[in-house]
Image (tube, rainbow, N blue to C red; front, side, top):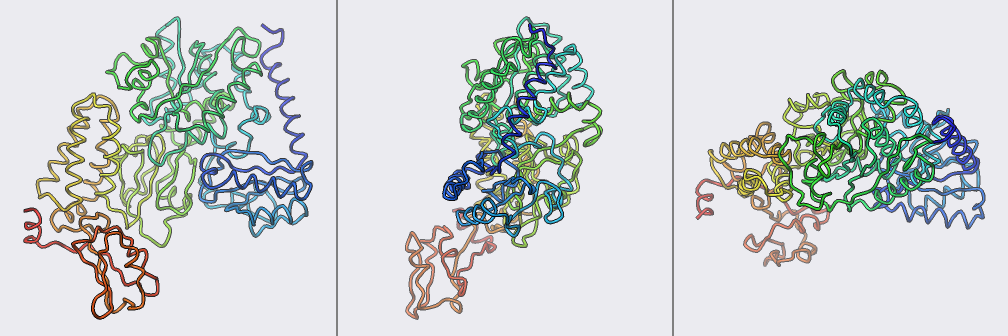
Length: 638
């Protein structure tokens, strides 16, 4: 043990980190967003463009070009923040090589910030608005995303210089029970989806009185369209690591694991670097900050099975077994990894802990609602203008999230539904837009909070097809252990597939609903219990759309291929244009004797190519989903 207290040792680390950070801030810094979303949009090329242009101007000694994580404005990727001494830090979006050249030429080498290309400033000034001035800034309140996109995730000094690990230093001078009391008093509910109070889970683990206790972070984020946990690990990994260390100190654990799916290579790399750096600083490993408390972390890479997001299935996979859920009790707090008491929480849950310890439970409970304090983090995707990563106080309504934070739907389309809670979440209609976002209100509406995926749909989406898409995902990801989940979801999928083809009758919907309820009630884990949610909610709120498919043989949204018809309007068709003919893969389009084009319906596979290829000045190809006459429906069935 050191003769210095944890706070004294931390102060030394903090002073070194601040000096290191200030040395960088004396130079112009170009911070390129290189989380996975940014990389997919071309951020690494943008970084290379900045390096090339800076070298061409001989500014290497004056400019640092660094990688940062996800700032949340994914719709504007690739983007970068330029912080030049004497100017506010400014964010530029939709970058390309031409704009990079302009910024280096006019701003880095000159003194013109080119405000006409800027998204926002990060500091208050009289010339340009800040992100807080955006409509979404009024509703957003960033806690665990506060540093994402603004610090170098691969440099521990960048985290420590902003009070990183100060909560750990503070807690190590208290008794472990003090941490538990603060977490319990904060009423922090697990952000993995179930919303179970984190303090109660930790307390149950302590009461197990095991000689060996484990702490596991569940980063097996597998929901389609969800990227919250990945972005946090890529952008601010030390926040999660500090939360896990605090949990370990509270429950008496000496070993922890981050279960990260192997499909997140960037997150794995950043977390491993963070672990290594924390060990060097004495923040992980033996005698943390000079105390007799020792704790270390290791990464376990999951193989991408969605069911392993369930706690017991996750533990089984870590032990080399099949990733299948187990009956509970016993809970993981009594018998978890290797048969020992285990605390397992989500990435976001651990990320809140350092903030709660640093600022207090009272501060945390003042955000959100009394029963659901804190914030909710969502990946806002689908038919919404400003897609990205958002963090809003619990109690914010879906309408505010979609229309104020997300800036509404593009192309003047009408809102139809929002699917919230991942593939096992529910689809809510416009009448539910004023439902507050919290664990209890969403469950009452037929959806779940889930891990934070939120997909917006417009008038062009077919709710039958949407329900089928999400059920197909969960059915494919079922481990097969439960008969209801294994067979029930398959029968539901077959029924939904038939409905998308116009098959079925009045009793089909009743059978589908009854089967969905049986699967929900008879499955062992939450994958099976929640898999029917998209079906049940779409049946509840969009039953007329199901009836149109079955009784009229048409898809109102013109999505279901078997219920579509393509034809060419003769008055609009140009005899000189053959674009549609060349676009058809089955040679279904032919030229009539009068020179106009026509579609052979027997050959047409309804691929949509002709509709996309037809020039806008003609707009001759029409897609319809006409009602099928009862006699025609009977003929097709035979």
